Length: 271
Image (cartoon, rainbow, N blue to C red):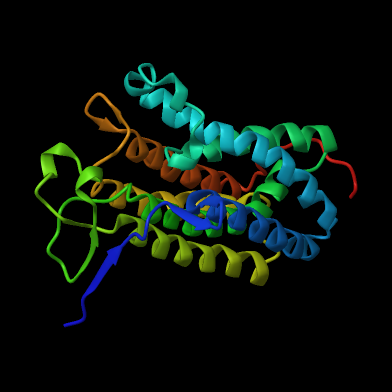
């Protein structure tokens, strides 16, 4: 039987006197790859590629602070006692749902300012976003975080003792939930990219809504395996938000294809 034991080499890489953080390198790589893909996809919808470069600035300003703020708010009992760590994003501690919410707000402002369809931009960003999410999970691997319950499966993740929850201090191997979500997100990427390229007649917003449903379905079950979920009372916040994504995405598709109405949008001008 094949066995895979994943072991992080550490959160940092040293090049001479320079210390780089894997998490930051992965995020930067995901951003560069995402904007390159978005520019290419833009040509399929007769959108100027430069528009996607301009949007990138807005997305970074909305998504990264949103991801950190979301995480800090739900972990405030800790950060209220460690104020110096609030901005230490290189140590991990960002939430993708916060990034998505921040990115949506930024895109709304951008689309209104430029008078470009919000849903057209959302469809363009969706494949790039989920590809970036797949890459970003490897940041969790290098930081030895966001892992699942203990497991003795042939595939497992070795977590250093100092990174283990106290309840599992004597367990060495855990579910590699970073890998589960990475693989799931790659499948979602293939799905939405195929829809985007092969079905240009789809109504605006369709690709993004399908992304919201598909990603949320995976996150819903993977989150149930994790040991470090952000909580609100007895509820895992990511599962609650995932259910909202599934229901909201489904209602949007019903609106588009059953009721045959367009989604509310920004008043646009010709590109």
